[in-house]
Length: 104
Image (cartoon, rainbow, N blue to C red; front, side, top):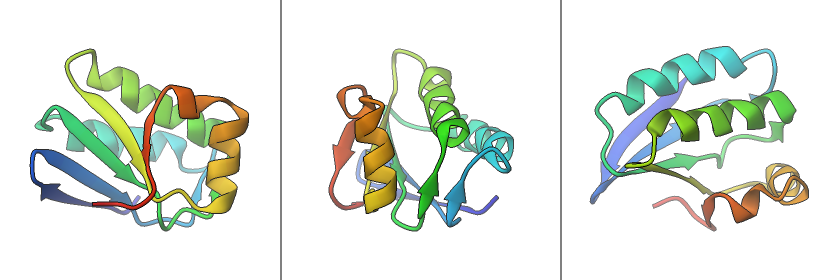
């Protein structure tokens, strides 16, 4: 599971460097994000610009990461491609997550 991490001001930006976030990689994604989130600041931005496919397992993994961050930190999504954005909107997760058109 390839996730690039960088600081951008007061936020931690985690760019998922995979084309798919689905059942096949959901557990690896959660494990890697758990490592990344260990020292994360208040804002964690998940850059999904390279993700072309997101299924319910992948979305569940993203939600699990949000819950793992707890109430003191928040997970934001950025740079959603058309297919990923469609899943997020259809499931109304756009009302749960702050979504940025582009990654910082």
